[in-house]
Length: 279
Image (cartoon, rainbow, N blue to C red; front, top):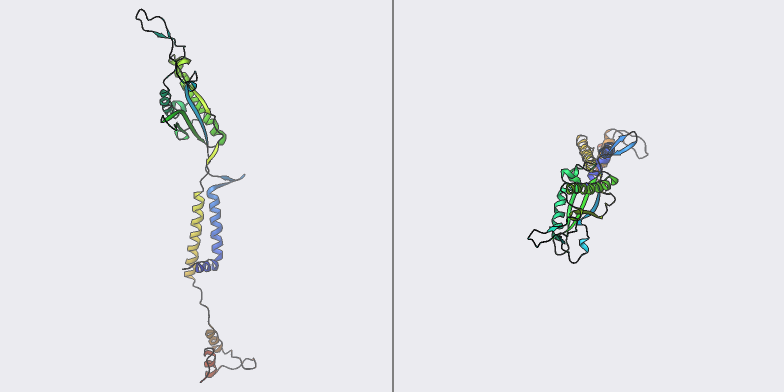
């Protein structure tokens, strides 16, 4: 069946076609929006994301030093006693240790302990943390990229900020509990502040598309079923019209007046194909 035939059937039952089209549009709108006293309200929720970067380091700005100094020793070693290190004296750790800590803290960010301190109480799926890969040399950098998701732009930014604060608070409490001096403590510093929330995914319109397509397909199917149940009468030819006219006794004489019933010769003349002559 060609396109012209489809169009002819749809036009023949145009009332059914129009009803199916309006029903599809109505259901498509209803699938994506709910009707309230305040108008249409979108169904589903949008997702907003915020991104930040935090540096795992220590006091003394080791990133700006070419050579890391050794910790000065206190006390005398002449008597063979083990030298003591001043706990308040700044010591520099192996730079590779910060790489391992950055990898470790990406797991702590989604742990129950950290998420339990966040006011929004996010799910693990809302927080994605990963160390930044290095351009050359080391496989990763001591920098963690933190991506969070929320249902609003402001909420995403606040969630990112609260997640960093929760990690910092957990580390500070554990450092104080284990008597780790500030000179020997790991520091969490913000390299890039949480970005403003940006839309990452809007409400899905799949249901609306499916509702519209199903109504359109159903409309085409109904119109073709009606066409098969109510076949259109074929076009009547000139011979059929002339024969009906002749059999009804509606012959016309040469003066345009109603005459008597046609004779056999007149019937043969009316039914004779045009362009043919008598022999």
